[in-house]
Image 1: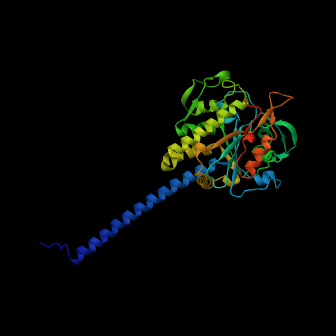
Image 2: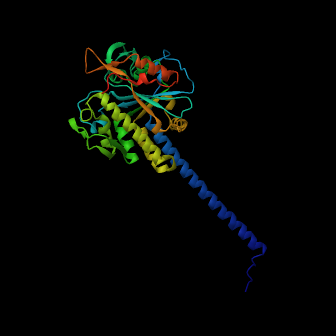
Image 3: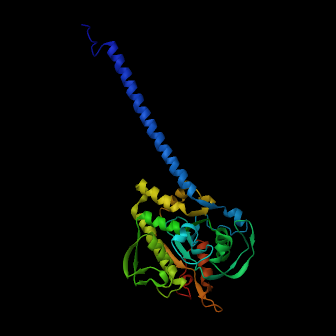
Length: 354
């Protein structure tokens, strides 16, 4: 019988080395395949989310005639909510509304240091002077006086809204973010709902949401009805609706913070997918990396300390269903934001209360 080589024989050691190398190659190959698979999935996810985002080049659309930036470290972001009834939005609201309008408009000011923020809501029924603008097709929309603020979007698009706000305020808008209602609904559903508290009941007038006074967890569809509610709550005015929109914005930001989405990749992707599907930004923010960097720079802003203000307005003497910018209150508000100073109490006093 032939003797088997001992465990310490040269041939045995060679076989062990070959076996060890083979096992190492298998492990390395497996790791390489896992890395490639993860990279491929990550690249697909990145490309998918990046592709969701539409953008507008503000400098090209507006031109050079823009306010100068006064405080380099401060940021001013115009947030628009579009109420187009086209496409997916048509399934969310059966109202007979043509075109699209900026149903919600907030100028969010983040001071230098970025530890707090102020959101100024501009009532959509405000009569304003619209500057000359180019629409998406490059056609000129001539300047006009006494036009409703929310008509600017439908006439010439978001860049013209930015130009109008800059003309009204003298403040350089650094970025703009627009979310249409379909995207808003998806974002709330991805969060699993948002909790709001009412101090009085919401009647559900004109097809709106009906809620008792107290705390409610709203899904995406009901959240959309909540921020659109006008006639079923308070005095039924557009000014009253602004309070609901500001309340909901604070509740949604608090929900995002509470869930700590950054610690849950699956939830983060779900939120990012919902949030970017119906998102339009300025070209400087139009990528995941840019949005993430901007969000990271804002991490010190606590929603619980964010101040919400309505642009001071007064009822128009010619048409009491419309409002006009109230002076000198509005001028003092814009000046404080432009120079990154504390907002004086009188600048928050709106003659038209809603």
